[in-house]
Image (tube, rainbow, N blue to C red):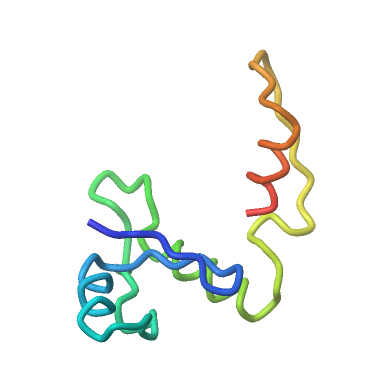
Length: 92
């Protein structure tokens, strides 16, 4: 189980013990020792378990989200979400 935390616009996926450690310390602690990450792929090969950490580190270095500079085209029928929702999703 993990919890997502937004630190200076970078996204962290943290182990749950981060919350109890912060509570015991009475303050927010450095996130990196508590970052959830694994090497390789999920059992079915569909998910790269290194991706969340990789994209967070890229955003720290470049100050851009994972979709920066990409053009996105959606083909086919779909229910169009509100524009604000799309902007938040692409902004990352």
